[in-house]
Image (cartoon, rainbow over all chains, first blue to last red; front, side):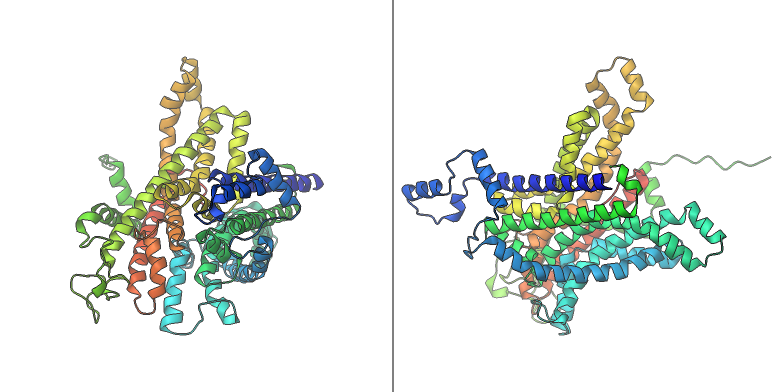
Length: 307
Length: 294
């Protein structure tokens, strides 16, 4: 278990380093960063002075290590537009994002797990196909189209729900619905498939044969084992979908979260904020994956040896 | 005498497929074909230039509603441009970008996957390491970052869309190559003195076509979604050129008074993703390759 934990942490740190490096080189790839910052009509001399000031005349590798050292010291740079540390800007966006994400995850788990189990149990029944049809629709409808349609109906036509910001609980309804729609679609599929795998196992027959009530067979022996598979999937698939979904949902509903910040800094070319934001979200996803990986190893001893 | 069932006349595989299809699949095929035709014929059937403005006819509703202007079948947008013409051209551009992006992804991922499967060792480890790194980071972030840094031109968009799905091809190709390499017919070819290149071209490649086609269709809907999303957020192809996603994104501001600006392109996006997704699942089930969709 300990070796597995160490290996997971090492892989996590390595992936993170790769991402930080890629972000650095990708930014440099696009030309001299000075040209993004400065207004046109700057004299040659001023440009030279700034280049020397930011040490952009040093070799790429020296700059790279300076960048890494700055990262290590907590120096992430200043926003071009707001003129304050990017870490500050990104950090104040974390809480709204986390709130929305938690709300969406809660809804997703509450809906998707029961739906997945039902779809597996009634696979040949019309209930099962109905569930899978709904799930397919949730998967095929792009979340921004869903968001736009919801806004049209519930905000503009019916005037029931607010669209902009996160001031009241009512503000949570539409963003949560949109964000969880695609997560529910994904998780229901995974739960159904995991349950179908488990339902055919021998221990299910044993559980029934020893006279357990069907409910206990399904819940204690079926869902528990399927849960392990589902858990492993939540990390990669759901974390990725949630990060992508947040970007869209937050910018549509002007949610003051990190996704909205990323899109805005991308459109206004505020590179330092975008850089740090991308690294933060990527880091969060890697962290979540590592935690889930460890939880997985803890739940299923077979995993500790392999991989 | 036992009467044997009459021998079935062999049919073309495509016809077999149509006969086996259920209603939804047939519908998806028809919708997909219609969308493809509309996209191909857009310059011929669109009544206006997609960027032609008519400031006297701004925000007009579709024909049949009050205030509609004859000639503008589906109404006009905030600059008096014909929604039908813009949607047709948007559909054309969306599909073009998606097809180019998916092809690029296929070429990059397919090549790397085959390389990893054939070469093994360190090459394989680094390719699969890159695959893992790409899976670990949500691609929307990478796309945002690249589009900002490289600027949003059509070619950058294709590049971004191409990078979106390469890792799936790489994974599938590597697994397929490794499976095939262990089969007797490859060994037989090697014993017969075929060079590695000949084995790759004559014996491996034909067997890789079917999983590649399936994965192409499956990834196409993801790529259409990604392109629409990025354009919707204002990060895609820049105005006045518009893809469907960009039309929805811009039309959002006029939604309370002119919902048709959003509804027409949104409907087309839905139709396209629906058709492509069903066709992808259908092909996968038929090819029976164990592919893992995201």
